[in-house]
Amino acid sequence: MKKITIIGTGYVGLVTGAGISEFGHDVTCVDIDKNKIQKLNLGEIPIYEPELETIIKNNKSKGKLNFSTDINKAIKNSQIIFIAVGTPMSKNGDLDLSAIKNVAKTIGANLNSYKVICTKSTVPVGTGKKIEEIIKSINKSIEFDYVSNPEFLREGAAVKDFLIPDRVVIGSSSQKAFEIMQDVYRPLYLNETPIVNTNVETAEMIKYASNAFLALKISYINEIANLCELVGADVHVVSKTMGQDGRISSKFLHPGPGFGGSCFPKDTMSLANTGKKNKIKMNTVEAAIKTNNEQKLRMVDKLKSLLDNKIK
Picture 1 (spheres, rainbow, N blue to C red):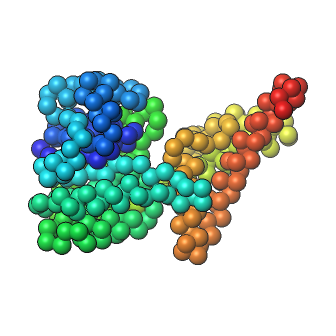
Picture 2 (cartoon, helix red, strand yellow):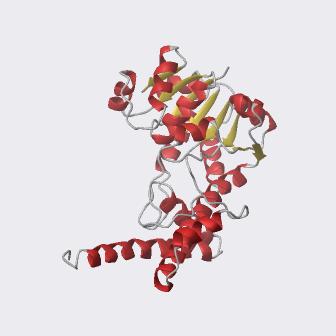
Picture 3 (tube, rainbow, N blue to C red):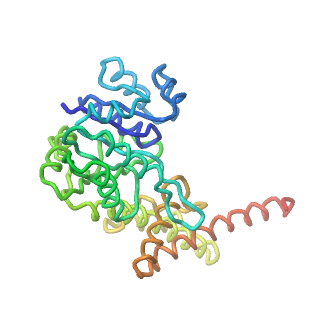
């Protein structure tokens, strides 16, 4: 059993905290939003995910899951710290990492013993090094290890995705940290869930590469759907039959208005920008973004046409 602190009680932080407490660990979720913490302590869950409220209330009643605004105390009392704060996208496609950096500074100021610092937030490749540098610049004497442990949660199935994942990615240069993290996910390890042991940069890239590929599938099938409409083919039969090919899979192969939400638009743009910064043109990713933007406009045009152009 580990003492774990989750910094951030947004979508990722709350699901992570609930899931890890379900594994039997002592978890404290902290947030600077006093109103949110007050509501969580009263049993008011700010988001809806199947089973999330039940898991939170059960583990809170057992004393396995707590909510607090005292980040300094939570850091000092923990063995493992998960960073799960927001990384919103700016207008130029870069991510705003100010919250991540502020958390790193707070961790550095309160580091009182060896700890594993783990990032759950989706961050560009290379962010892990920056977090380590910030902590070390503030606290040079206390040892710690850094881990990238990206989340792969789908809205509407987040609890299931956390408790029964396809894989767990643990990126670190420290074998000690890997073994500690493996112990956090011990129920999954014992259930033979694949545990990927890699370095920080690879773990960070796995998250972006995975989401961008799924976005690509969505944009691709939408282009096929648009062509099917013009040539008289049934895209639903096409996509279903494509999905029956084991090499392709039917997941994310459904035509529609395009991808959206809090992850895919941000992650594809961030990956494309990472490519630009490293002088690598991410042609397929940029094409997926372009197709997605065009698909949204196409949907608007179709609606206008259906309504006999009454909307202007």
